Image (tube, rainbow, N blue to C red; front, side, top):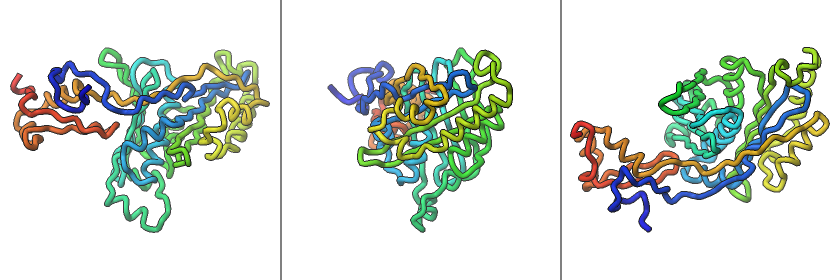
Length: 324
């Protein structure tokens, strides 16, 4: 069977075959939970081997890979809290050595992402051997959270200026200013003996009205939230990334005295959605002169930024929009 990245007899606009990328599913990638009769809910996200499959598609510096892994875990956790059909994405765009950070997750748990890095601009930040902060890598810019449910539905997007040294702090700033929602976010990503791993613990304080903790007075709700935060603060990166420690056991260690209740787990999968059909549609939007400029020896190569695969198109097979 020929590779979908190469020209074939099948017309490009009909070729939706999956490219040669890892076929990985993590059945319990996101474990939602809540604390009974308390205004606290959360998600434990553990990407397992999926993190290594996604992050090793690009040969980035470990500092950049760590940031990308944190973004993937965060996006998976935030998407799991929403009821939607489509995709939820996190995008950080700045003027630093990493001008673009993007991760998105569909309602079915298909996850993808990448960080675009400028090696020359990044080098001074690595010179002393220290790991640069997310703020140093991203620079000045904005953080956007977008829920896209297709052309027939209104797209929701929240924007906030990049504030804080870490992606955790930047996310907290977004929720404070845009959502007025009390949250706790712990993100972890590291290269382990088993490969790259990424994980997240996300807690949210929900309103007392509506059945969750409504029998508690305001002081009791405040106390329940502070207790949950104190327990969550004892969690280490090592525990979050430990493949041998089941998620259910980890949550039990943290919250069993607070009435831990596990909700239905959600699967995560390798979610790059590139195809010849999709990319040929993009090429068709360019003018003939642009297409001629892109071609080398009669071939146009388009590289998917998520899976880092190059798709080759014969210039003679591409009809530009201006040609009809």
